[in-house]
Amino acid sequence: MAKRMAEVKRKTKETDVRLKLNLDGEGKCKVKTGIGLLDHMLELFAFHGLFDLEIEAKGDLQVDIHHTNEDIGIVLGQAFKDALGDKKGIKRFGSASVPMEDVLAQVTLDISGRSHFQSELESAAPIANEEDIKYSKQDFDHFWEAFAKHAGINLIIEKPKLFPSAHGPDIHTLLEPVFKGLGLALRQAVEIDPRRKDVPSTKGIID
Image (cartoon, rainbow, N blue to C red; front, top):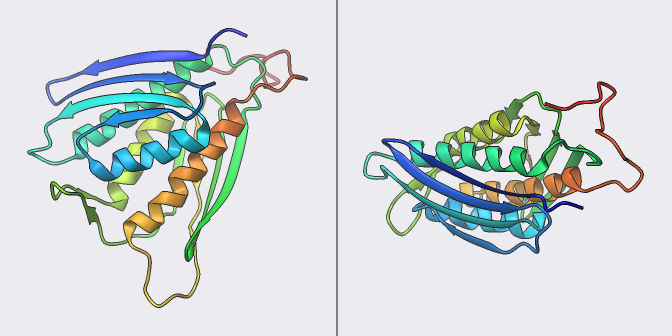
């Protein structure tokens, strides 16, 4: 089987992002975005998806994290699309349920070539890293919406189930099982089905 790898670079007046991806890796991850929580979440995503992932990003964080966060999502989506090539033999669909403390995250996706993003993640107080850069639900949505659009994926993140606890979950506890679930679901969807010799679509093509 041909190596399913991609390298994508994107440079604008606001950001400079470089990314390498191996779909058939070991979960090795080296990420430096300047956004501490996003780095941690992408490490979890790659580890559980068994994707080798390298990201180096510089952006106008003195303004806010919006441009850097969104552009990393764009480049990650482009890399998945490039690495998948003609998509012959992939399983195409993936889903995962992941618990963490009092949260149960549920993710479903389809590598259909037609992008769609829906998130029912509940709001929670943004969490700040050591540089006091905050990461919120809106930042999460912008990241994965950009990813889904550029990867050509239908991605649905259901409303997490929250179980009674002494205190409600913070944004870290909400995001962590979702990123793990996204890694697991994508790992399932990009796996090669030995019984599938062609593109998994009755159209015979996935854009």
